[in-house]
Image (cartoon, rainbow, N blue to C red; front, top):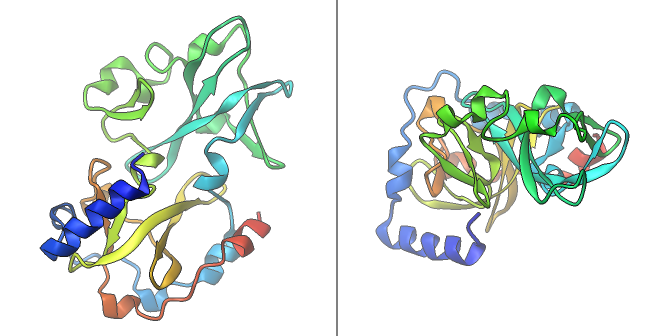
Length: 245
């Protein structure tokens, strides 16, 4: 994940050019599915709630027997903006060294502020990133790759949440809006919104991914709105969102 100083350097370069080449690469069509800002309501997010990327990343992971085995290193998301798996860094258990495993989202139990997975000393090899049974992270899916963390990689159309976090955010003219500070998921692991922090505060916006020309390799995320449409957006209250979890 790029650091803010690097992103700041990028922002300065973009401002000097007046438009981001990365933002230009993300083109929206007529966008029948693009939600108008006038129809975008924070109350729906607050009421539905869920969890956020900041909460999930680095969170301790335990087994069904409540034995701590490691932490969430990253999150793999598919081209439909749905979590496919979490990357767990395991270390200091089962007489193995530090290693990464991919646990399918439908096997992850998120409850009571904890992350539980069905791993044990006998089955952790089944969740190996490169040789396990999960096809979306098999070796054949790793031909087109982006780094997940350390030497762990994600395959084509599977992207890591850190590909999006801290990215520069621009409006449809290329003008800077801020940085993607956080990502909100519903309880099923579907992305609800991105949280953008900028000079005007912290706001939540719909996320438009692969179907709208975005690619995780881009250094910026282009919003399908004009600066005028976004002017006067309310600050998003992450505490109110989290309190409803």
